Image (tube, rainbow, N blue to C red):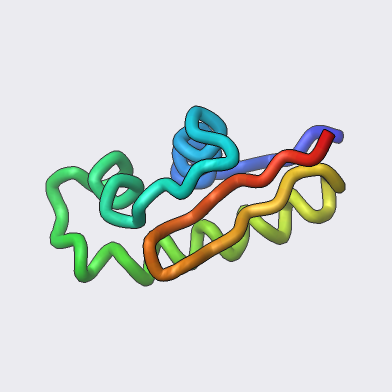
Length: 79
């Protein structure tokens, strides 16, 4: 199923796919998405993108899930 993603959602998914099954620290995602902005300000923006991306993935794919922790986010891919 094709899912429409924003540029930021695509960037988050790309970063998670490159390190699937591993935690990608929030600070790394923020630095990749918004390199010139204050990380403290971008934290809520990242959370919103991940929230929306989780919902879109759940609708389109039953084998991929984004898990969050205090350290970052992890894309889990089931076989």
